[in-house]
Length: 193
Image (cartoon, rainbow, N blue to C red; front, top):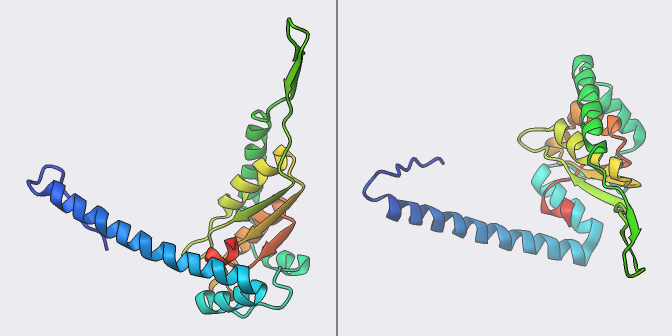
């Protein structure tokens, strides 16, 4: 719940300190829950992942877990054509911007005859977490995947929560446009784990 604080109020310092302490208490609780989830994922792998996804998102994952290309295409096909067009335009603009930022390898020999330089190499596999619980953000797909592709990443894996099995068509269309290699319909700490 929102709490209104006025910096000019005589008790502002006390109220602000109480607010911060309350937030730290909540953060501590969250850290504990996340640590427990990650420990279960480490210990029990996909079995724990399937259990947490059923608990938090109310869906039973298939044993393969990843969406198939035909499932992705089916969901993406439901995306409004105007939205797909906007995503395609955004993708091109994001690509054009990030191409200009790509670092170049440099090499030279200094006055002492020593060869010096910098070599840039991309991460080969990139994991992307795309929000999808209370709201879906196809822009997150584009803004994370396209710079990775420009950098030269070979494999992009995306996780996205799908509460009650609801898969956002625009997110799937953005994933197609950005050429995501694998999509897992999972979210939360268990997806990161």
